[in-house]
Image 1: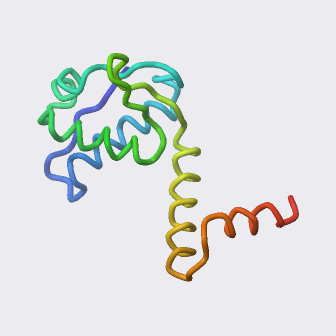
Image 2 (image 1 turned 180 degrees about the horizontal axis):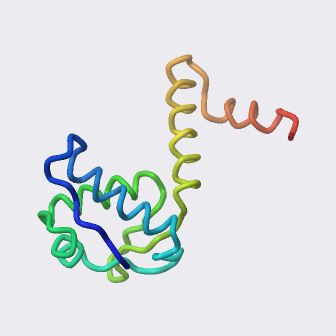
Amino acid sequence: MNFRKVNKVEAMALYQQVAAEIRRAIADGEISEGERLPPAVDLAAVLAVNKNTVIRALHALRDEGLLDFTRGRGIRVVGTPGRGAILSQIDELLDLARHQGIRRDDVIDLILSRPTR
């Protein structure tokens, strides 16, 4: 894995830069689905950031559906950036539906009733 160091003077938060770098490595095939990531301490050393910055980035990627944290097995890649983007859009759709008073099951029924293109 060829991680690039983050730019500490850039306006983007460090953890977002770290997440973007890991996301790039997954998209470029440097890290394959099912592969384990190195420990946060090692990633922090390579990227020249604090371990907590890496941990925050890893949690963000987990929330996107790209990573899975399993006790005893470490952090594994379980998705792709494209899948993560779709999951993010689904979350936004469900939030919108919730604000409109529409239940999750009703949203699913709406999606299933749509014709495929």
